[in-house]
Amino acid sequence: MTNRRIHFSSDGGIILGLVVCDGFFADAPIRVQTHVHDDHMAGFESSKGFQTIVMSKATRALLELESDADLPYRANLAAIDAGQFHKMQEVVIQLLPSHHMLGAVQVVVRMTDGTRLAYSGDFNWPLESVAQADILVIDSTYGSPNYTRMYTHSQVDERFVALVTEHLRRGAIHLKAHRGTLQKALQLLNGVVQVPVVAPIQVCKEVDIYRRFGYQISPVLCLESSDGRYAVSCGQYVRLYGRGEGNLFGLDSGTAINLSAYMCDPKDPVLEHNPNSYTVAMSCHASFEETIQYVAASGATRVITHHILGSHIDELARELRKRLGIEAEPATSGSTHSWGE
Image (cartoon, rainbow, N blue to C red; front, top):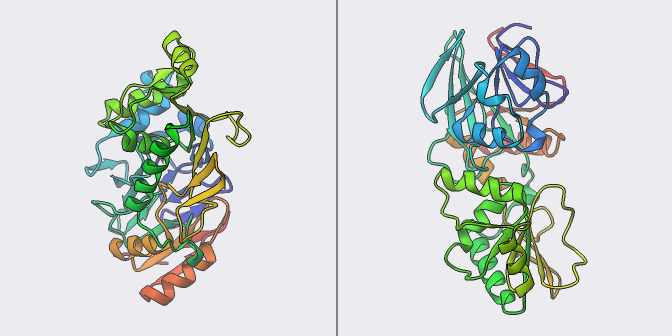
């Protein structure tokens, strides 16, 4: 493979010349870790032994929490500041915040011929800075026109806070969300709810890292501690659920709230399953219309639509060609896209 190609590996990695994002590829000496969600961590153990791994400082802190005990001592990890340009071997790399979760970034790789390659990573909208690129790989999580939402992020936030405060009068709130969305919810509840918030110890440690990096979140009680057990015994509290704890449906008491845009009506951000169980369309992914806005803001004249599961890549490419008049093509596992050849 030449360095003038973009390639998509079978494990979901995006290879931009000499740089692979969120995957292991033996011919790429540099890996960029855009964030810590499990579906972007493929091949990380292999990368530690063979590549220089670039990430944000917050991502490094979260990875060290994952019991990866050797990370603080590895010389091949580079935690860099957002926005700055870093010369690494034959390329220049820039990371920009994507607001998907703490530490998540967009990636720009400037090649020796001056071509700017970019990968959006998972991203939210709006953004203060959008990756400027000639060729852009765009995440297609909500790349279908069917994911056009009729409400704003702030309207979702308001409905969520109102739901929590209303149902706290009846007892406990059980809250589950992906990492990043969960901490965003805690920010919204900070200073609003006056009851204890409890969580398993790993979630408490994650919250501490978010607080260290500037999130306005009150301390969370460890569920296993005496204070946490006492808070639960009093009956009025907010209980957070971490990875591997299953779903919330079928609880004996309290109100279950799942934060996910996946099942919700595009016209109404709150889905009521029953009077004590809800899904709220809070998401740290850009919607379809916001994805179009992101591409337009990037200045890219060529776009490759990508999703690990292949979701909506054809629809998004078609809409980009129609709406923006730019070259857009879907990526598939193992596909290669070259330029200047």
